Image 1 (spheres, rainbow, N blue to C red):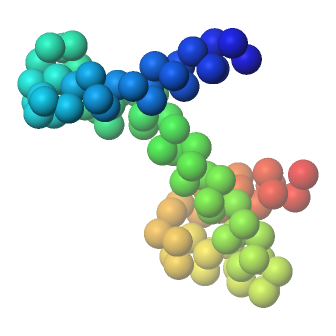
Image 2 (cartoon, rainbow, N blue to C red):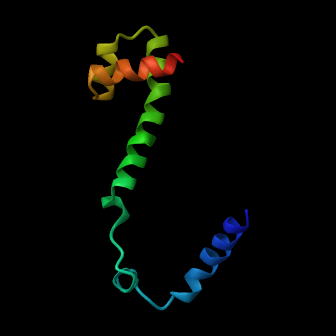
Length: 90
């Protein structure tokens, strides 16, 4: 909890400390890369998409749609729909 509080205070004060700098200047100062290009970002995005798809698959199945219809509707492979359906049943 102490660490969370420390980071909260730090991030609360960061905007004032860097208010005179543009985003690109800060990026160069800290040699930051676009987080959207990192593996962590991609993994988080994939996980979020999977979490969003699970209830959609469950709802479609409960309405009597076939796995093929769901795959076509969601524009994902049939194999992925089956995986999501299997994980949803648990």
